[in-house]
Length: 150
Image 1 (cartoon, helix red, strand yellow):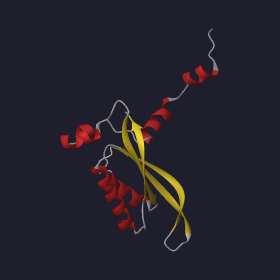
Image 2: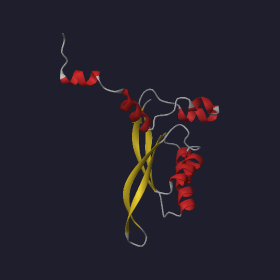
Image 3: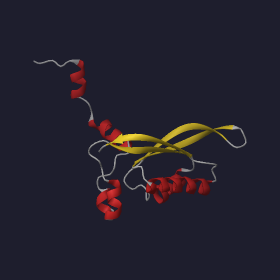
Image 4: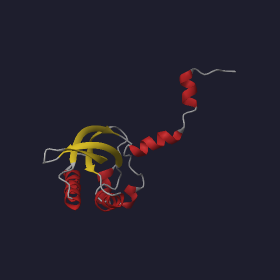
């Protein structure tokens, strides 16, 4: 009987569930979305098979009620980035204009996108809509280069 070294043994019993969940949570694009978009929009979300330079944008939102968040996500965010996104729950803190530091339950929205004016405009519309609708002082935006392929 052949024995496996510990690394081979670990690989042989690796459950695929966590691997697939990690792929989903990383903002992978739903492969069926492109088929439902008009040709003019479909090319904007072409899935590169070789690594290309995109932008990873994170938006940090102060938490609102779950129903309000779901409505905002479905009505404001998803129409602008139908190809995919990731939402993470976090705990943060914020020093307001009053100088007081407040603990803030936070949602982080992660979007991988090409570096183009349409994406930038959509991200700024999301930020503006959130601050106006929920009376928050701001939504933090962080952009970083990312090499992506699908």
